[in-house]
Image (tube, rainbow, N blue to C red):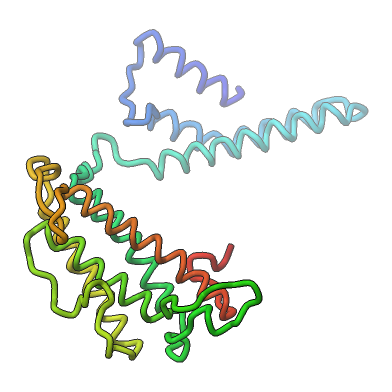
Length: 262
């Protein structure tokens, strides 16, 4: 007898309640799976025997039987693999931690941080004093624009100034009205200054919650604002200057890390 007939009979009996079977969480019947797998080789053998009994003058029927046998074996293997990789019945994945106001904004800051830090790392130290003014491009006007290093120091100093009112913590004296330390020139020192400013931001936004998010406060300049605005505006400011850092990199023949491999 064709083994598939046995399997169909088993399923038919189960459907009318004669042989109730437990199923896993994906609806698979483990016993039917085992039965299907055990009969798969016999299904192949059965089809091949039928092939020999058929008229040798009909190659299309031969091909049909071979395909049927091969597909039966392939289906059994795929079915087994699908159930093998599924979680055990009754097991459930631990629920992920739901996002909070603080974690959502912190993620935005992390994205800005990665873009800025990666771009800064990509520029050689001897190019930290580069600005487009040095290119003397015809028709351009880059006179007095910040160098690459000054861009980074401005980002870091602004981070401190913008995020400090969220907690009321005083920014470091090195902010220098948003310019950063004038005497800071080494790449390693500037990189540390930038990274420390983002750490300051992560610490500040960790205090955000539904109660204080839009509570009226004063910005560093004394203007009325909210913690929500300050937390997100600093990230937006970082992205604004990241766009300029990207142009500085490309002017020096350096592909920005975020654009590599595309």
